[in-house]
Length: 410
Image (cartoon, rainbow, N blue to C red):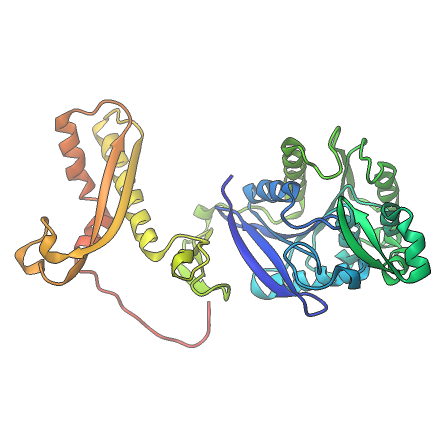
């Protein structure tokens, strides 16, 4: 599905800038989730993207970020450890809390799963926690170091081959991992917990899921990921995990209130502080973004202001024609409207009157398509009815705009 994906940055616990993506649903937004990736992975792992897409389908926005020293984030991996990952998670939660809304859900994959279990009690807004292939003991990750572990303990650091990449790991990382007590954190969790794990996981064995499940208090759930691998490389496995999490989470979120049950307030637009032009738009229960293309300095995270005008004209045209077809009991095929916008010299405008032919004017070109056969007579009538669309009338009339400037914010 299409996502409204924002590229964000925020300071981690050490001051290094962390790179992130915020995936927002196209419709009403119900809650925010925070996603912690697997050991030495990144926020852009295919499985993480697909899980975020499934959650967005249910109205849950997902912030996924790269831990310090990984992916596109700044910092030195060799100076990090499990405790620094937990601190980065708290920094991410603070960023969401101050700029959007605190996370209601924590999701962690592999070692990221252990991290969210450790940190959940420190984020009061968290309603539920989900883990995917998480170890019950942080020290489990040391098994991946092989003979390099001895060199780290002897010399203080060593190069370790992890998933085909070389990382410098210091003794402090090993000591920090061994000091963690994840099962104690699980016992104190006091949050609903969903554990997803693949029985054939060759990286983190299924016995870890058993240990976490036994340590947790109710409510707790376990779902088998069948033949999935540790990284959920099969798109279907990742999508399945996302669907399970989103369905399970609905039990712990406020009921989704249909827009029609509340008065629809006026449209609200507010700068997000990200990029030069990005604005958050709220229209009733719908949230989206207005922005400009990258070519003019924007993030291209949403339609431009003139795109919104074109959207309004196109949507109003289609709705007006559908009402007309229903009133006249016409079997009109599916209606499509393409709208383009340009500024032209008024003297070149064939539709303009003599009084209007001065300077430059805005010109919207509207092309209406209808599935199936349409007679010439009906085609002319459709063009006539399209001009009665309220937005069309507003654009061609002289609108009055009242402006008030006040302190404060929405």
